[in-house]
Image (tube, rainbow, N blue to C red; front, top):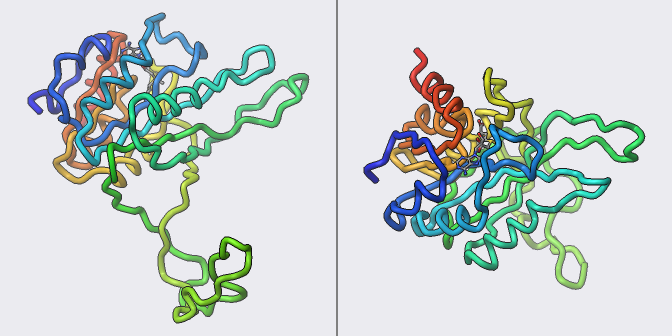
Length: 255
Ligand SMILES: C[S@@+](CC[C@H](N)C(=O)[O-])C[C@H]1O[C@@H](n2cnc3c(N)ncnc32)[C@H](O)[C@@H]1O
């Protein structure tokens, strides 16, 4: 794709509409959440973005859609769920995984009668079967014998102890679970809502290889683009707010 390592200033749908089909390996992005923040008062077209991202994705490509909902008059909007269903049912993408980004809790006023909110969705959609470079983690008690019943249940609920019986020792590493915990975003001056650069990096490592093209159509302060650059991927970003373009350029070209 000739647009590699470029930042575009403008509306994402208008920018993407002239790009060729199947030119992007991975999208890691986070759109504005309902009307929680204004970002300069710009609007965006969910249907158009979903359609263009689906068109631009290569077979096997992945979209990571990080999103949460506003609470209006005591009720969550559930916008994020409607968006997820649209990607699956209207765009025809595979709902590969509904992952959770666990972040520091936002305290509610006790009068709201709510538990403190401490997570956001990370919907992972794919065009067919995705590539996955699993991130592994060390196991607690590695090398020690496994205790207790170990096995999957049959459909009738009885234990399937025939599986995995040959290996009764705790492995050195295991595939990471799909709730990922990070401290707050990068707190870049001048942009009100970043996700953590480690979150972007972990998704880029998981769903792409070096040399692949990673797009963020809501580039914000450029967190995805910076992680892609650092991990030797090509990056492409679109951002409508001109003030944020200079933040992105500063972050990408800082020495
Ligand atoms: C949640 S922020 C993204 C933050 C980003 N993940 C980061 O870590 O910095 C959403 C961004 O989308 C941008 N945006 C809103 N409407 C847009 C549009 N129509 N086209 C392109 N960007 C848009 C906003 O200006 C805002 O910076």
